[in-house]
Length: 296
Image (cartoon, rainbow, N blue to C red; front, side, top):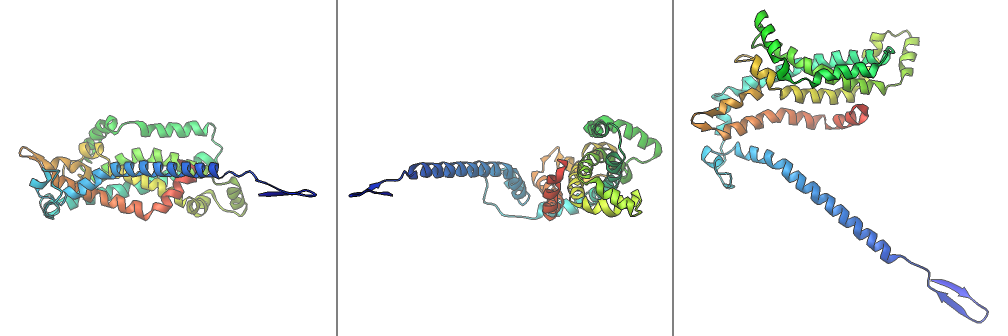
């Protein structure tokens, strides 16, 4: 209320207030927030349903798996026992780990040196060169698997982990170069100039100065390469047969004339997903900070 005093009269004039407008805005904000939460909730259910269904199916007997509506069932570990004892699934997981580690680490090292060279030596049309490198990643693996097969057969590398490591590196290095180039460009050139004035070589600058700074970026790039290599199917399917076979190629183990063993297939999918899920959880903060650092 605004009070206006006259010589003989005190007049009270109501000050303008906007309670109705404020209430309407709050109501609109609440409705918007509720709508966003509802959309995210529905999308989360849709996204997580296949994962939950696969996990639940891995603990079902065959008769229960064939009846998806059977929500009440007797849990069993038979699928996992048969997977590791009958199918020797542990060996294929081991091959996947060896190929993934053996491919990702050298790819990151080569990509780090390539990114340093692209961004620190005044290369003309540096972006065009980086795009040309990245374009090799766009080539489907199935398009180059025949040359790999013929060359490996000639030199005796078929069905070996080394062959898979080399093949996966041809796909990993271009993507890693593109990502690390973006991270490297965010490091000021003044750091290099100051280090050179102190007598540091290019090699020392790269490994003792840039590498620690690029930690989050290398983690994010490395995790993407791990996911890509772990799930690689075309190379593993056509370049291996027994000894170097990896996890993704075991899908045909569960399909036979008698039918498809969905319980064991679900167990294999669950076991194969756990390592990547654990890595994502462990490096979650570094991954987020790395992806927001400037490369993607």
